[in-house]
Image 1 (cartoon, helix red, strand yellow):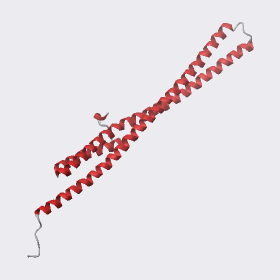
Image 2 (cartoon, one colour; image 1 turned 90 degrees about the vertical axis):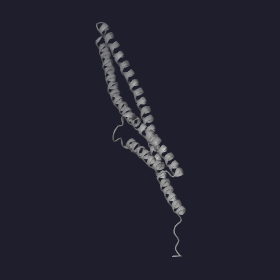
Image 3 (tube, rainbow, N blue to C red; image 1 turned 120 degrees about the vertical axis):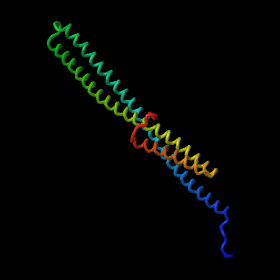
Image 4 (cartoon, rainbow, N blue to C red; image 1 turned 180 degrees about the vertical axis):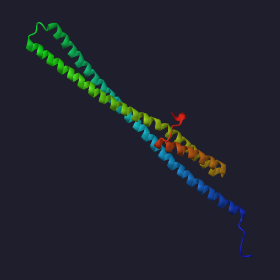
Length: 195
């Protein structure tokens, strides 16, 4: 028995502490990866929101231009109709026909702009819906990222303090942050405090 030594309790404690420290460090690295994914999702949602808003604004400006043209053609047709009504007896038949043809052409143009305007409106509303979806995703990434950052800090403190309870707390906070990040991508359900 003289050849075998009993392990030193201090050395056993150091081995146990190193094991805890390395496990917490690995989990903390995983938290950082999830945080990066959360940041990526948040940035993407913000870009999608801004792009959709810009495109919707462009569509509404285009809609307004079509609307102005539609009203311009309608007002010109109305003026010519009034003129034709006043001057119908004084105008000869070819001049009256020419005026009637012009009125018909103006009415056709006004109708064309009205149809185009409706198509533009539908596209603008679709883009606004895309903007709203991206806007709804953003808070999930923001809160998820904040919770993951808190979890990383708490895990780091757990390593320094060799505190299992702090590590468990950081796991809980990270789990919530990861859940919010996943919900930001998938939109499984809406959390009322994030709308």
